[in-house]
Length: 103
Image (cartoon, rainbow, N blue to C red; front, top):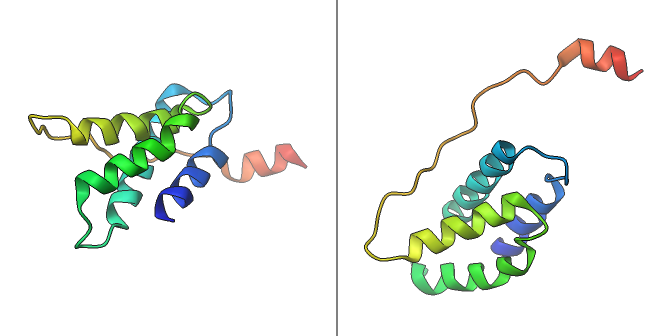
């Protein structure tokens, strides 16, 4: 259920015109959300493999899902290496000026 929710969120926030860096940010946030929602006693390799199998068919439709799949695959590869995860940089999204222009 957690994987489906993450995929729905990634697919709904990712349009075809979205920038690759935004897709990367969303994919990383999706992975962190998925990872944070796992139960403490969940077997990670089996759970990650199941999530990867569920997400792979959608990787071509969304750069964010492709990034999510890449992170899952990297987390399963041996030898283990740290994943490059970061929160998006803060940025202005328009504010009052954008609201006035859209009226």
